[in-house]
Length: 425
Image (cartoon, rainbow, N blue to C red; front, side, top):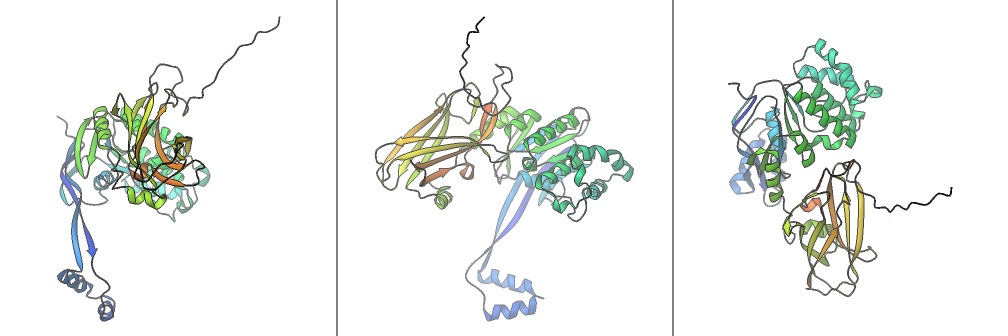
């Protein structure tokens, strides 16, 4: 029986978070940090003794165990701060685990943060050879792959330019091309692909699919793009607060992720952030996307979209209106928006009310959308409250129905009427 290409056993990663208490330390800052700190550790210890410095343990990962077989593509999903990037950094051997054991049976290539593994002063050409050498490849092997790498990345004109002058998109194109063509046995890909344009992301997903099916390589893929996860990965790992919530079939795991990705408590956890951007005269108390009276953030293209909002006024407000926008997750660009009056009469301080927004079926093509909801006045010169991805609003998934031809093309459906006219003979 073949052994797994990746074995992770009881891995944990701990960080020490230091908290300072009190004001500054005098005695001319402990005699200029004991003449520019030959014994700086004594100062730190003294702070701990007198209670000025407290140390808190934070476990970014805890009790992580799983196996991946050769040729598998495994998605890693979870909310921000769940530990996804930390896990990939440990697997890439960038940072060691605090506890546990990792066994990798093959050469590892990784695409993590933008610019990781590149020397900014070296050209694109020189960085290709540098990355190949780091992966343990011989110069002859790199030269055989060189033209393919450059063509895939599309940076022919800038090949001899230092990469410090590259845009983030160029960085990502070259980094992915190097990682994919250098033939690592295990490829680790973080959400960094979101930096590239939509066309290049599609190209990358196609390349990852190709190297697993035809070359039998293993990929661990971190992404918030559930459509990409579903199309590429048969298995998925869901991380939640540094622990594995579930590992299994992608459809099952992503469904559970949806139940965990509820909107944050709008009355407490996100209110401070919202008040920095708006007046708070009228506030959202809750929001739900509903399907068959159940909360759901995943719809088929031919299903009606329904959003339900609960609100509360903290001051008297006239001509209250609602504004909504739909944005591309990769670029943040608005692809559509709309607005309407909620109440024509005054809303009084302390008043609680609710309203619903319905969007007809087949408005959008299959896609993923970031949502932006706001309470404003009619002229949209005053903004009372805003909720979006910054306060935990989930990404909206529009799934294909496979009923009509070409239904997967474009972002939304343009309604139109067609009238035929008689031709004079």
